[in-house]
Length: 308
Image 1 (cartoon, helix red, strand yellow):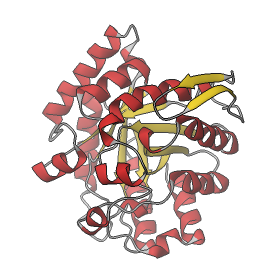
Image 2 (tube, one colour):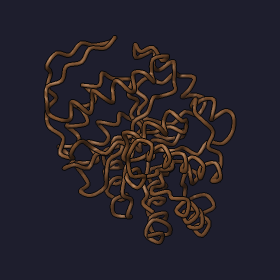
Image 3 (tube, rainbow, N blue to C red):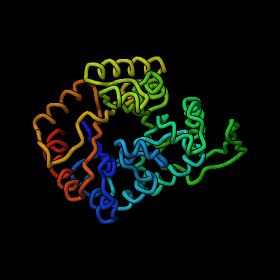
Image 4 (cartoon, one colour):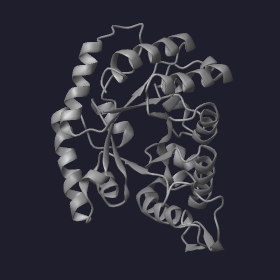
């Protein structure tokens, strides 16, 4: 099992101090030192105040944040968790990701999804009803841009005639794509195009309704989704082993100040591993930089290193 961590700003109760440069640098270095293999930031450039006030996660621009973390680390991979394809022109996104890949010496993993906050789509000038069609179009344009060849593309929103995206990506043919989504749509895209599928454990009607996704409430349902993913991957003419299974929300938000059942965490990790899960993504508490630091240390020692 490999472990990724979402930066503590992902805690809805985050405080501005977690974005202090010294705290951010310490978090990134500490995650790397404690054996985490991946560091993640999510993508919400203009969420509604209602979403924020009702418990929406904290966010920082993923490109700026991951670029900062790249400069103070050397091994840990850098994940967009997840980049919403429809929020940006795909050529702009391809350029930003290629630059990040170059500056991080090839450590970028692109988590990509369709998005779910319709008010955010509208605030950014995008029709949310088109998000699935745009996802396929945008993914195609980004992959072509990363070849280094000139791109010509005509869509309802832009016209590109012989444009070239620079710098070139270091990872070939492009950074790994992890497609996010519990629904059949997400599974099929991961099977066809992805190096990974990100499933999110979801419990309760509110969470399922807010994120506009298919419920993934327990390991029994997860096992069926993994079987479906493997079947779809084979239908696409690919080896199922080439698509890693990544699960978010397998463990509650980590906070060393709460009950710390390390044995239970290790048992859960073992169950997920037996199901065929390759990665577990967790979020660290963000209401106190010191608590975030101590949580990274404790979880790293008790679970990450012990679970290898």
